Length: 472
Image (cartoon, rainbow, N blue to C red):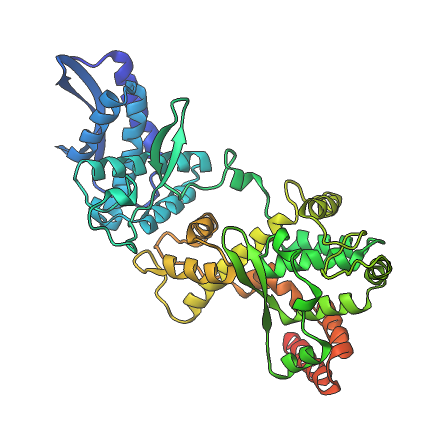
């Protein structure tokens, strides 16, 4: 059966279009998209498929037949998948990676390569989805085994509970018929992603936000602390509002913590889907919070009103009525400040995302600095997610993967190695804002109220040393 002139024109377009996304200087085998015809159920079908030189790529050809016949896709749609598979096959050939060796780390490297070739995020996501669907098909037809998850774990025989599929999958439901399908979780945030639509404030924006909150005439210290707790602990607003006066150490205990070199203490909160769990709070933040509880006039006025009404004010962050603030109230209050400094599509909840991102960045930096091989062949992904999970108090590492995927795409280099952050990049991050001179002076002032003269003197000497070191 002959291919129509329209289909031949489409094949010519596919051949010309693909050239623009091959990285300059890449030496690969010759991959050609050519039409083939086959008979199925007494009907002749013609589809574009992939050749390596003069040899048919049997696996890709089998998938394209499935895509065209079983999924009832048009010639043009099948051609688009063939084009994507050509890009992927060329990348596999360049790195000498066969189908049975492909893992998420290799797919992330491919994403980075497409990004370097100036493909837009929507196109990169389309390519990733097509290749992941190809691997699901390979798994379902026995070409690979236990490579990619294509069904519930309980449906596998003798699969260990701790087994990690090299190509990860997550199940979604699509369409009016609520059809279930397995897709890649490596999809990048973009115009159609809720993860991407919610902005994560950067360091400069948060510095402006802090200044705006501190300049407000009403409840400035309380609101500034709420921002700091979200930013420096990564806690949800509902968790922050659980903290009670009795959870904080006394002034004497604070001084002892500084004398012992303690950097953080734990507070028990009820976390989402986990029950009681430990929230780790920097000692400097605990010091600021205790100073607020003991000395802030606005909070003292609320406490006195409630004492007279025989309603003890036990929470740290109080409403005007003396009870704990509600998450909705905090969202409304902080939303005004975010809008005032021009941070769009964000609120205090996104400071948690900023904290998560920095924690993962720091875990990655630690691995690189300790001489750990951090490339596509190392098992660093799981290590970082577990470390971040412990610090964040997440119930499962899956909720952290979107953040890690974004960082991997940003920091993976074409050679497959992870690029280390420069000192300038680290200094600009949120968790390092507390090292600024103004913040250090505020901390020392607070320490003078609850600590000893020796401790204050030691901090001042350290601050002077840092200034001298920076000037040389």
